[in-house]
Image (spheres, helix red, strand yellow):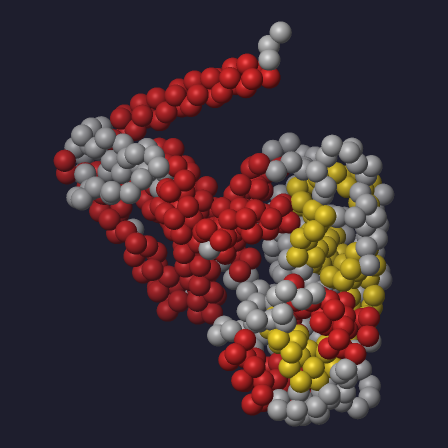
Length: 538
C-alpha cells in the first residue's frame, strides 16, 4: 500500500518532471526566435524595447491622449497610467522577487539586436510587457478605433523582449497576465464617466442589449428605470428645519485616524476651523468602532463619520439604530457613497453640514447588516482577503493586482440559491440602487432613491466562462459575454444551499468589509431608509 508520504513524493516528482519539460520547451522557442536574423526588423524591435524603458513610451502616448482627446482622452490617460503603475510594481517588486528566474543566455542573439547593457534583474515576469498590456488595455477601453492598434503595439513590445534576448516567451506571457489584471483594477479605480443620455444597465432578463441600455419594458415595475439624469445622484429632500447649525452645532463627527490625505491631525484642525461648534471624536484602534459610533449618535442631532467605505458602513448602522441623519466626510481610498452624494471633496462635505439639507436615500440590508454601496460573494471578497495578506509586503495596489490575478485563476465557484434557482457563480454583486457604469461590480449611481437592486452575476455554469470574460475585458466590454448577467429588480430572494461541514465558509463583502456569510441571506431594500446630508448642488 502506498503511504501518504509516498503519494506526495510521486506527485512532486511528476510536477518537477513537467516543469523541466516546460522549461525545455520555453528555451527551445526562445532559441528559435532570438536566433533568427529578422533582417532590418530586428534593430527596430530593439529600439521599440528601449523606448518602453521605465514606461516612457506610454507616458508619451498618455500625454498625446490628454492633449488631443479632451475629457475622455484625459480620463483614458489617467486610467492607463494608473494601470501601468500597478503592473510595474507588481511585476518588478513582487513577481521578480518571488520567482528569482535567471535571464536567458544572450549569445544566441545577433549583436545588432542585443540590449546594451542587458538587464540585471531577474526574468519572470516581463515588466515591460506587464506595463505595455496594462496601459494599452486600460487606456484603450475608451479609445474607440485606436484600441486595437494600441494592443498590437503592446504585443510588439512583448515580442521585442524575446528578440532582444531579455526574456523567455513565458516571461512575456506572465507579464501580459499581470498587465491584464492591473488594467481591470485600474478600470475600477478610474471608471468611465456616467452616461447621461441613457441607461447603461442590462436587461431584466439577465443579458445586456447591444447598446447596454436598460429594457424598461422587461424591468421590474417596482424599480425606477428611467434614463439617468445629468445632474448627479439625486434623492428627495426631507421636510423640516435643518438638524444642525451652520457652524456644526449638534453634529458629532467620529474621525478615523487614517482619514484624509494628511492624517487625523490635519483633518481635526480643518474641522475645528470650518465647523467650530461640532464635536469631534478620534476613533481608538483598540476600541470597538460600533460602541464608539453608538455613543457619538446618542449625544448628537447628526452623526458624522470621517473615513472610508468600511467606516461609513458602520456609521450607517449606528445612524439607523439611533434614527439620526448621517454626515459623510470622505477619508478612505474609495469613497463611493460620498461621491454619489456629491461630497467627495472636503469642501463639499462641509457645505452639506452648513446647509443642513437632509435627503432620504434607499438602503439595502443583507442578513440585517447595511449595504450602502455594494455587497459581493465570490471573486471580490476572496480578492480582498488575499490583498490584505499581501499588502504589508507589497503595498495596497500592487497587492490588489496580484490578488486579483490569483483569485481569477485559482478560486472555485460558489453555489447559491438566487431567486429560488440553484446557481453556480464566480461572482454575485448586489448594488444598493440602480448603477449606470459598465463594470462587473457596480460603482456609480445617478440617483439614490430608485427603489432598485442592481444585480450582476458571473455564471460558472457556462464552459470557458473565465476565458470569455477575459476576451471581453480585452475588448473593453467586460460585460459583453453570456457569462455575465445583469438584472435590475426590486427584491432578490437569496440563500446559501446546505453546506457540507468540511467546506470552508463562504465569504461576503459589504462595502469592502469581508466576513463569513451567514446561512440566511435575507436581502431587504428599504426605500428612503437612510437620511443623509447632501449639499444643494451635488
